[in-house]
Length: 307
Image (cartoon, rainbow, N blue to C red):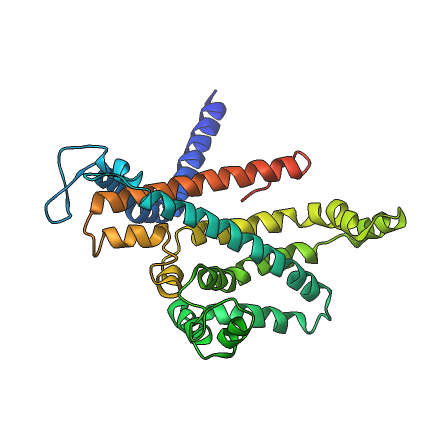
């Protein structure tokens, strides 16, 4: 009996020591998440349900006015402006993500099939531009797309724009800026997937007289699906709430949800409406993550892709 009691005491002490070690290990990270993520999110949610005060600051009582305004309802009646901004954000996100995928796939494949000594240099060439401040890179595109530049003159010669007009501000410039900005975030996950590519499956598909398209779809695409979904998450979620690129390259013509939210905390001074827009972006993020997991599970042959 004494032996069993001593063994039980030793086990309980080990459990307590392990729990204390786990607490000390997890506590700093958990505290950081609570202070800088959970509490600000709760405050943002509370602000969204408050009433807009005379100076744009939230005040009681609680109401759904901010969400009604986000849907376009105002004191002058219904206006589609905010919904058009939301639709433009969704369209720009989908379009830029698709274009990034189309550009990144051949780049990632080419790098993965290149000589081993050149791969780090190629990857560095893809990543280095993203080390520069985003505002500086966007100003660079403003200079490249301005009137009188070779790109603007080429577009003018092709009849795409009027004489002495630049390619920005426009939705085209916003899309181009988004594709350029998020391309590295798609290339790197795809490159990691291509490095693990089992070429024997591709050879088997070719031996069975599969066309290049069918060989890609049945032998290459399933193997690169985890990298593709990770890249889509890294591109689509920040693109949906992008502020700098639409603000500079769109100049009001390519306004997206991020610009709408930022304006409510600055010029328009309507914090509840801005908070409601931010909550909408959070909801869209969760929906996007859930959809990617479901798509990965279905296309991955029953295995859920971890994102």
